Image 1 (cartoon, helix red, strand yellow):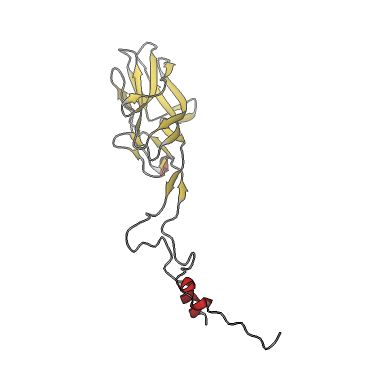
Image 2: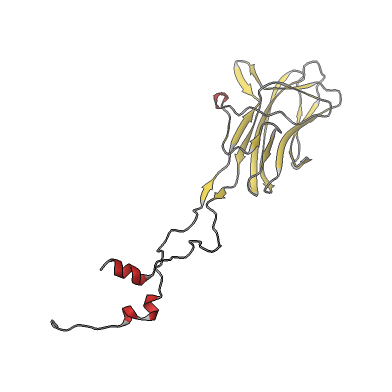
Length: 212
């Protein structure tokens, strides 16, 4: 009823004046998902030595239709540095010229840290120009692994990898592409040192006083 008032000492109690404001400050860092990706070609043809070699993928120019989203493909070492552990998929296409050789077996493999980790794809070359494509999926890689594409061929076979060619009016390029990758979590660094802002520093009593 009108005329009655309620008196309370709660607002002045030690309990209330010691309470901090929940979500009273900004938290450090925010996580976002970032998916890696690249498609890298070749700037020049490459003659492969006896026994094969790493394919010289070194063209990331957007004008040629190539890209390297996060800079994890190194065109100097012709390799991909794995940014996060997980399952990966790779596509590759090679234009092979073995003119002057008899038909020979050609092997294209993915190497990790210098060792072949997937079953090499085997082709019988055609004694001329040929386009060879393949895809490797569900390849589990660790953070920091170094991935390369390499070839191997019969002893004595003369093999050249062409950066680009036209066959029957269609243009083909040699390239390697990251087909699938796990997301990379990015965000700020959370510090636990003195003065961090993980917990709020504003007390409830100060907030109440500020609005009266």
